Length: 237
Image (cartoon, rainbow, N blue to C red; front, side):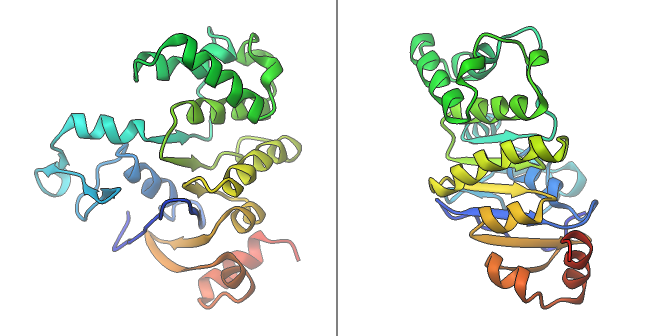
């Protein structure tokens, strides 16, 4: 359960969220994308507050059109790749922009091929997900998120289902996106990625922000005892 959390992701900044399992990282990310309903507090997207009705456990978004519009501008990449097994990689990347946004198919195909090139699997357009490695599937999922032309990207443990070698394929793509100045919130167990990708790192513990700050400061000089314990357990000596 989240308690008293306040988080801002300025345009063009990358935020990393770290913490042990059950600390609230993924819940907070899902609240950002309105996949979870918060029981109190405000959520603003580009200064626009989400409208609610009801209170407490009965609180729900009041305007479904607003929710849909905001979600289309916040592309989420999950732990599991969630690719359609009966569609080629190109078709997977094109599906949402064509069916949800109603963009012209030819225009979307050109963009989709460009994004697949960008993540390094442009030669895999015509194959199916089962024919790809886990790292390639996750890069396809990132291309799919980018093809929505979102204003921000949300990553929920994007490398946790991958072995170390394949993990680095995905980390390189996410680092490149951060260097482009894309707005991102990244929940990760990978401390090196959290350090290298982020402008700002947030450490959650038991549903609260225990400590936050620039990555260099937070990782080299943690102030709270709990963060010190967490880093000593997760970063090799």
